[in-house]
Image 1: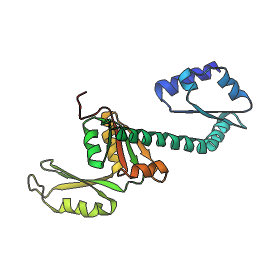
Image 2: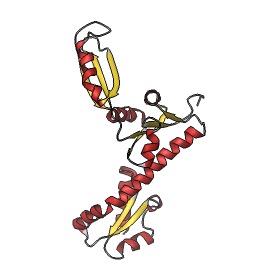
Image 3: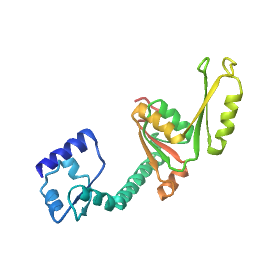
Image 4: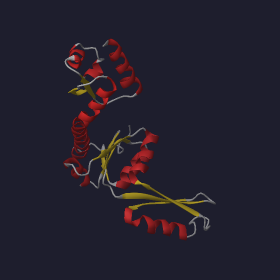
Length: 221
């Protein structure tokens, strides 16, 4: 038990931080492990549930994965709901730390103001980029999926607005992928919210994207 607890602490706190633990094992072994307080206290507080397993070793791990899918799904729903509620709390309290609207959120994200970025998984948007090979001038537009090809055609068939060269290279990417890249540069937490859930509908009422800010940008830090 001590060896398992030490390995768990090393991996799940120091190397790969986790948000929750599911303890699985045959018979009363898992309860003995939990009740014996072998786990580091932070991990002890992260236990979501326990699962009875018929096997140990690799078979037991596969069994635990199979049985934990519903538990993890419920856990994620609760987590998503809290993120959205926190966003609405900031907005409704007029703290200045709740933001929504695609362009406003992107501007805050680029300026390292966003702490947590929320976007639904059914956001039907893509970013189209046109970059001049000669002068590196960049054009960009965020459009709905059905408008991607017309926008790419527009960028590629017209001269560069800066140097007038007909050498514009176009690319596209899903809006979530684009926001993920921006978030990674600023250490922002990105959470993709289920659009079909009730809290996803709440976020959809704000345009399917919102952000909890690090501070009120209307005031100096």
